[in-house]
Structure formats: structure tokens, C-alpha cells
Length: 386
Image 1: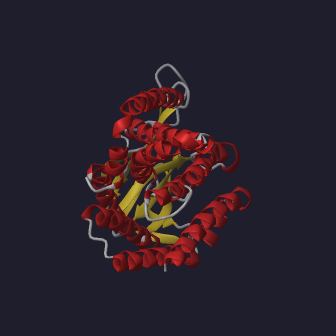
Image 2: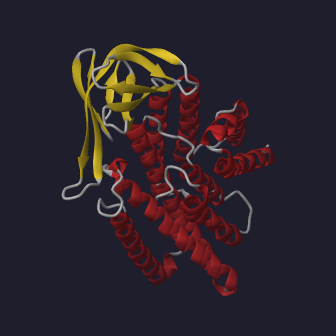
């Protein structure tokens, strides 16, 4: 069973990686239909989850923090399945003064909305002293009630959420996206909340891997202090770089005008910083055999908070996407490679898995390079600016 889980895990990661490359040449619609939206892709995840649950029960794991951590992942997968099976999405094209009660699905079919919506006015707001848009705003009436919809400001009616998506070039029309996901989103958010709590618990658990590795390094406090200072300096540098990069003066995308932006960047940058120092530590362990044991414990120590911050960054980004675009996960190449990176680094967090951890975590850093440089300069997607 253990070998089957490992094989399924590798296949899932490989399929996701392959899909991002196929998307580069065949387009987003193609991979959405033939990969991410295909029955066999959902079946792969279901098989992996079922095999993992079976193995978990067989091993009779009783430590509550570990049980709840893995349970949160199952809940998130369940929420994703419910979204896949039950969510309804479409677009609502609007022209000023013309009411409609229809939306258009991806396959170009018209369906009825449970309300009537009419665009009264559309406006663009600009950053002060410039001609760069800061927001797109639709002033509409839903069943006669005035409602304002803009980037990061949604409207909700009868279980349907409406998001600012696009607009007509003459500024006389607006295009809204609509989403109804009454089952998948709540279940997924429960999974997120449980994951957030258990990740903190994982770091505080006296019997957990983080506390164990910390106990192994008690005689190297000077080295830990130097490492902590180096990590902090690197993190501050990255934060300063990226917050400057995404300032209105440098990158004024309206969707980036959100309070979640600095939180998302901070968690991801901290994760990347820790993973970079894991890479350096592992590399030293390979080159200098006398430091091998110390660097092994140091790499394992940093791995747990790195995974926690990476999870936080991914799921804060998912919540932000749900607020802005109406879907918490769109299988964009950057999202997909962030998930691949998380899955790759989750492997050495399991102490029962035998491997050369120095070599593994040195090679694992390639996923970080692909997530940032590979996506930005080759794979593209919505996040290619990031």
C-alpha cells in the first residue's frame, strides 16, 4: 500500500506539471477540459486520498495534531470535489439601461438568473495624478435595488455572487462574472481554517517534528542565531522588493488594490526565504561531510515553518481569488506549481520516509525556481507578473 501511495503521489505531481506545459502550447481551455476538468484527474486525487486514509487508519495514528492536519487536507479535497460537481459559473454581459435576467455559460448556453439586473453606469477610477486605472466600477440595479460592484467588491443575491470581470471599450457596457457554489466553498473554507490551526499546532506540539529537531540543535545556539538573522535580513529584502514592485507606481493592476496583497506576499516570501536556506544548508551538507548531521537537523527544523508559511500563502491567495474572481482555485500555472512545491516539500516532513534528505531538498529547490522564473518567463498565466 505504501508503494501505491508513493506511485499515485508521483503521478499526480507529474500530471499537474505536464498540464502546465501543455497549457503553454494548447491553451487554458484545452487543459481545463482535458486535464483539470477530466474525470480521470478527479479520480487520481480521489484514489490518492482514499489510499492515504486507508494507510493512516492501518497505522493507527493517534496524535491529535497529526490526525487533524491530514483531516484538513481531506476536507479541502472534498470541498474541491463539491465545487467541481455542483458549482455554477458564467458571465453576465450588461449594456447601460438594458435589463437582463440571463447569464452565459462557458459552452455559450443562456440560462436564467433568479433576478433581473440592469447597468445604470460604468466608471473607471484612476490613481491620483495619473491616467492609470485603480478600479473598475459597475453601478447596477438588482431587482430595482441599487448595488455597486467593483474589483475586490462583490455583490451577492439569492446565493449568486457577481464580480467585476471586464468592460466594453466604449465604457457603455460591463461584463460581470457570476458564481454559485453553496456547497464547495463553505466546506473548503472549513478545511482551510482547520489547516491554519493545525499548522500552528504542528510547530508547538512537544512531540512533533519541529520540536524534535529544535532539541537536536540546542548545542548550536550561535549557529541558530546567525541563521535567524540571515533569514530575517533576506525576508526584509524580499518584502521591500516585492511591495515596491506591486506599488501603484510600478504595477497598478486594479485587482492588486487589496488588503490581502501584503499578507499574501509576506507569507509566500517567508516560505521562499526558509526554503532557500534549506537549499543552502542541504548543499553544505553534501559538500562538507563533517557538517552533514548538523545541516540535516537544521534543514528539517526550517522545513516545518516553511511548509506552514507556504500553506498560508497559497490559501490566503485562494481566498483573495475567491473575493476578486469568484473562484478560489483556477489551476493557473503559478497556483499549480505552488501546489507542486508544497507537495514536494511535504515528503521529507514525514520522518518515516527513508531518503537522502540532503540531495532531495537540494533538488526540490528546482520547484521554487520553476514556480517563479519558469512561470513568469515561459509558462505564463494570470500570475505571470508575480
